[in-house]
Image (cartoon, rainbow, N blue to C red; front, side, top):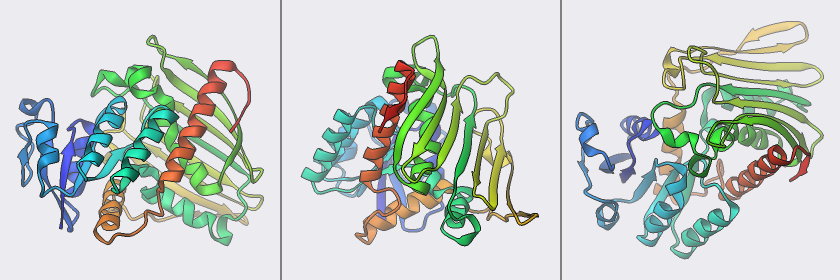
Amino acid sequence: MKNIGLVGLGFIGKTHLDAYKQIDNCQVTSIYTTNKEKHQKITFDGSFAADYEELLKDKKIDIIDICLPTYLHEEYIIKAASAGKHIICEKPLTLTMESAHRIIQAVNKNNVKLFVAHVLRFWPEYKVIKSYSESDKLKDIKIIHAKRLGQTPTWSSWFQDPDKSGGALFDLHIHDIDFIYYLLGEVDSVYAVGSKNKFGAWDHVMTTLSLKNNCKAFVEASQRMPMGYPFTMSFRAQTHQSTLDFNMLAGENIGKLNDSNQQIIYYSNKKKVSVEIDKAADAFQNELAYFVDCIENNQDNNVVPLDDVLYMLRVLKAIETSLENGSKVRV
């Protein structure tokens, strides 16, 4: 049984807390939040920590799960690593390559494990896409279209600040860019166009990826959809002979996924087949259970290795350069 110290109780922190309650070999024993009074109704079998240092001094805690704004990740990860704690951190890991290298150096120096929550790799529908791509059903993908559209998250204002969140590029676009890399390998070049919010954060991005295997991917992300527009994510993968098409419409933002209208359809040889998805499966439970198992059994993290996390940051920085310069950028 692994004991979790949860840091942050915003939307994603609460999502992680709910997921841990469904996982047998771990428990949240302590939570640190700067707004404890707001969360008095939160129920869990543990206690609130007075400060982060108190949490890190607790010898019973095996894993620190960081669900804080992106700009705080580096500071909190390095402190956790120095305290000898294994770490789970929400994506994106950080906003610069320099920061990422400092983080990795601290993790390696203290011989602890770091897991970055690229949740799409654990999402049931995307796991189907991955498995189809590894079979004859969707062999040799040539074209991908993906999109992720919604409003700016309403649960905190830091999302709008480019220096704190990286905007829709790092907060939202990252999901599909990362999954495409997971599916098809390295990127050769990127070309992106988009628009910024009033604070200077890219809040609508459209990227063309040219992959080294000669596949093309067209990806869109937005945090500027009008109120009432459903949170939308879709992913279409095409070969010369077949297509797998996933579409999902939910409530505003991402908070009502359980009420979403979604389907995944496979087209081949004039046939149309609706693919069944295990609706009881939960991406966050899948993800966190896997990370905890890796720690408990001292296993390698083969789903989201840190080399992939660093490479994805490189790709995002290339997209950012393309947005700023209006040119194609080699990765």
